Length: 152
Image (cartoon, rainbow, N blue to C red; front, side, top):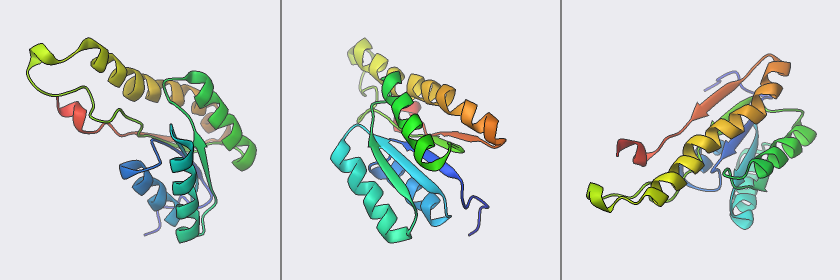
């Protein structure tokens, strides 16, 4: 399938495994240069390398925690330095297990806040940082992956 994305640059947060890794691989197959970020350096680098090897795409795996704006800024700066900017943001980072499940009286505020900080504020922060690149380039797409915890 040709989505007309060849040559674009995508940043995929939470890109080291699961849905994020699958999205990154699919974009790479479309000719997109892919920047993956996740909290674990070894995992994100391994995934980026595997995607590059299987697709021939140019990839970059960088460790970053989306709850830390300075780390997101560093990732975008390194991506822009290497690839010239960001065209696509796939905000997929999340908390394993989400907000917690079970009876309402057992859902802890701290777990909900951690989920909000990662999923929602992480998306907002990443969007703020990449939008100037998108505006300059005259193209941009932001895709938010919410995950299972949205059902609760």
